[in-house]
Amino acid sequence: MARIKIDTARRLGTIDRNIYGGFIEHLGRCIYGGIYEEGSPLSDEHGFRKDVMEAVKGLHHPILRWPGGNFVSGYRWTDGIGPVEQRPARLELAWHSVENNHFGTDEFMRYCEVMNIEPYICVNMGTGTMDEARDWVEYCNGTGDTYWANLRRQNGHPEPYNVKYWGLGNEMYGQWQIGHLSAEDYVKKAREFAKVMKWTDPSIKLVGCGQNGWNDWDQTVIDGLAPLMDYYSLHLYTGSDDYYSNVLAPALVDFALETCQATIERARFNQKIDHPIHIAYDEWNVWFRQRSAESALEERYDLADALAVSSYLNSFVRHSDTVKMANLAQMVNVIAPIFTSKEGLFLQTIYHPLRIYAEQMQEVALDAYVDCKQLTLTQDQERSRWPQSIASLGPFNVLDVSVTSDQEGHELAIAVVNRDQEEDHSTTIQFADPISISQGRLYQVNATDPNTSNSFEQPDAVTVQERQLELANGALTYTFPAHSLTVLRLHVE
Image (cartoon, rainbow, N blue to C red; front, side):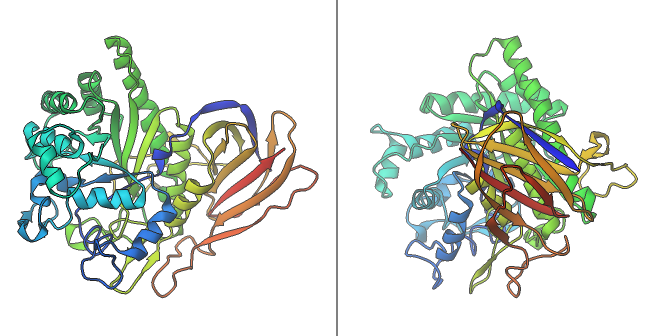
């Protein structure tokens, strides 16, 4: 029998709710035809799809990253302000489309305001200049009698938007990126951007452009930008049509966070930097089927993908002292939990763990000891369309676990992903100190086959089963079904 042992005094850190963040990019039908559809009977007076807004509310995103993504490295933000009918249409090179600029800074800020979401803007460090970046900060946050602040007022928003989070470019390490740079050249350029942006508004938080957390780019950029940045971004996509390669791949998150945080602390120590530098996992997801621009990245997810997403979230919780922001890429249609048509939408399988974690996981991450069957994956067995290998990170616990509590220790949430494709696992849940559990509730995502997907025809093929948890004399034993996510919510007297 498997065993999970919890010591409520062993606190790993406080969870920043920004780990449940989202991301939207001008790509395919993410914005146009996704969150924003002018003239649709499903849209409000601002052009925002009301059904999508309702679905997004269920994800409880506290923060939203925009406008990219690869798109931002060729984006002229000034094209997207002022009267809509006067905005220019531009050839968009990142995704080979035409950008009509009907959705720009003011529309994004209105969306965040309506949805009660914190905005996070990534600036153009490809074709963009430092003047354009500092002007964007002034437009959003300026309070004085200055050109860009006055233009914002003229465009209908007298008060500053007070955008707190600003990203210093997107994936500038990649050959696919407009304005691709070496790590050394990126540091030189980003330092100058950072200076003028913070001089424009000293209160903003800057996010440095990281890669995956374990390579030479990360070493160079962290050493070079540590004095000026508040967060360091990491990106990771995994996925495979081989079940175990898919559900085990998020082990890379733990490796990346541990490696990258050590690099950050080394830089802080050597350079005597007092301010903390946290990690922002500002692009992450399962993505491997639809990778071409022609596909518009409209990935269709199955249960196995939902389990992988759950393991990403478990890693973020376990490393709550390190990762203080994470942004699922993306929110609607494009590798997304919400999928629309002109007539409506359905929720993809990955929507459900995202909602459950945001709703049920508490604010303090607890350390948990897990004793269970282990899985191995050799390089010969591993299948992935992404270059990174996870075989050397094994063996892997078949039960992937994270545990949280509220500050007082009265509410516990235990998230367990049983990654075993075939076997259920009966498990005892033990506590280091005697506690009295008065009530419990269970939330479970599962299906008969891990290949099960949702669709317009079968929107609830994979959904959340919720029920009261039966407790026997305060003891807790539960059998976690094969290929399932289970969150146990317990009330402790």
